[in-house]
Image (cartoon, rainbow, N blue to C red; front, side, top):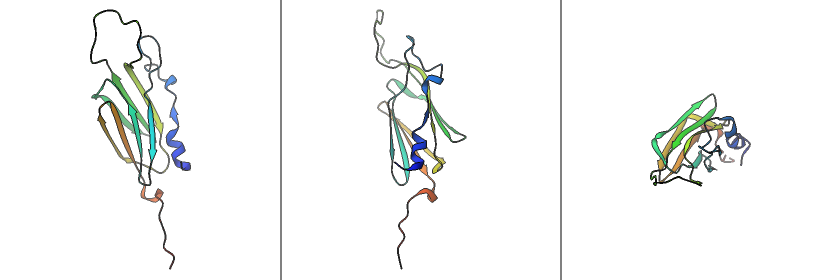
Length: 132
C-alpha cells in the first residue's frame, strides 16, 4: 500500500451516521474490500437486497460518500425473531488521497456487489525511466 492509498482506506466511522442502524439498533456497515493497481483503486462493497435505484455516490471535497437502502426481497408471514440480513438505510464515506482523480469515478452494481473504480492522476502513476 502506498502512502496515498492509506488516505483512501480511512473512512468516516459509520457510528457517526444516525440512519445507519437497523430496526433493532444494530449497525449496518457493508463489507468492503479496497484494491489498488498503478492506474486506479477499486472498492467492492457487498450490498445484498439493494437495487441500483437505491444507491447514490457523491464526491465532494475529497470525500467519496456511498448511500444506499436495502430491503429484503422476500417477506415471510409471521414475526421475524432474529435477523442477520442487513436492511435499512446507511452511508459510508472514504477520504480520497491526493493521487485520486475525482473526475474519474465509475460504479457498477451486479449480483449484490457495488464496484467503484477510482482513477489516479497521471502524475501519481509510477513511470519507468530509461537511462541513456
